[in-house]
Amino acid sequence: MKGRVRIVVKSDYEAGTDKGARLYAEHFESPVVELIAATARATERLIENAEILRITEGWRPSIRPQGRDLHEKLKAVDFTILKTGGIRATQGEYALVSEYVRATVGDKNYDFQVHGTGLNLHIHAEYDPK
Image 1 (cartoon, one colour):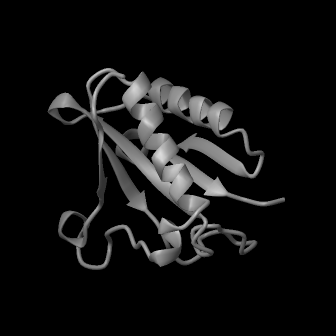
Image 2 (image 1 turned 90 degrees about the vertical axis):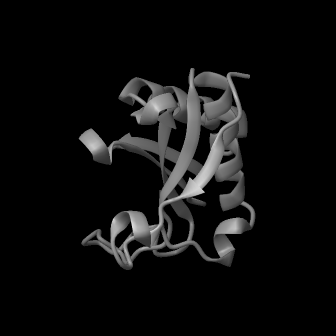
């Protein structure tokens, strides 16, 4: 284990009024809570100097034209990883965490994507029963 990772939630104070991560009770029920816990464990195990797993997105209105957005259905969360000194994880580190969680959870209904660029680079994790 590399170290203990705190799980924090992006607040309105950090992001501007009504721009923090919106989490509701369903986010703390299985299976979404399993995504959060597994991602935190993988971050602790794999990322040197990781300090914070930050939930940056929970619920949001659909932004996809076809209307399929699991954030809106409370089945998806987005994460960023911060290391000592506020250094953000790299795309390779995000991919490593995503692949590890996918392999250890072992449920084909969980999907992980690393996407975004610059300060918007993050892990998108969702529970998507097919």
